[in-house]
Amino acid sequence: MKKCTLPTAFPFQAPRPRLPSGIVLLHRTLGFWTALVFGFLYLPIVILVVYSFNASRLNILWAGFTLDWYVRLLENGPIIRAAKNSLIIASISTLLAVILGTVGAWLLHRYRFRLARSIQTLVAIPMVMPEILMGISLLILFATIGFNLGFTTVIIGHVTFSFPFVLVAVQARLQGLDPALEEAALDLGATPLQSFWFVILPCLRPAIVAGALMAFTLSMDELIVTFFTRSAASTTLPIQVFGLARVGLNPMLNALSAVFILATVAFVLFSAYLRKLNHR
Image (cartoon, rainbow, N blue to C red; front, side, top):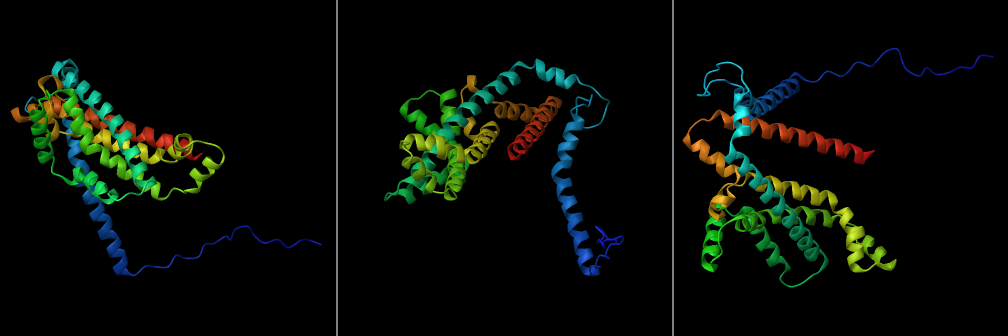
């Protein structure tokens, strides 16, 4: 006797319900508006990259394809030195911001004391304070105590406004952390320092990485605070670009911006690749 088996798939599909014309029009309008917003955001960047290959020195009319501006960019000593200074300052300030932000977030989360709310408010002030006020106040402070301007003052200024971002990111992660993890580590014989290093810190790694990326980006992009706290030897890339832009349109700035855009895209793709590996 032949068995009766159900078909694994029907040869037909149920027709999709038709949406009202008003909803369809709304979807198309929102789609058009979204495309318009993205075009407004990214079209200037595309034009900038295209004109970095423009042979015209005026950089207004297209005069042919060339790579001369990239070659001149690599041969420009002040820009290369400024880029190295920016990388050094951003790396050191990011490291210090991560340490201060992580330790500060853990102390505010782990221990309860009377002035915790006041300290939390004071930490958040640099995030909303106008940068020109912070730059002038730091300059007055360094001049009052007789501290010479240089790499150290720039790093102090960058850490001042960047470590609160790390602290906030780590605090958000700590709010969702199970307190039983630390208790289990202590019950198994770990010291408080060992439980923090081997149990808590790995759980905070995503927040720490996010805060470090934010701190590094803010440091590389900072202009106003650096302007008030730098010396001639500690000029960063934003300061150098600002000086070139004040003179006029320089095609090397287009080439420099294109290099930064390419580095940013490569970094984002690499981060997405690492995130995919972690989810496997």
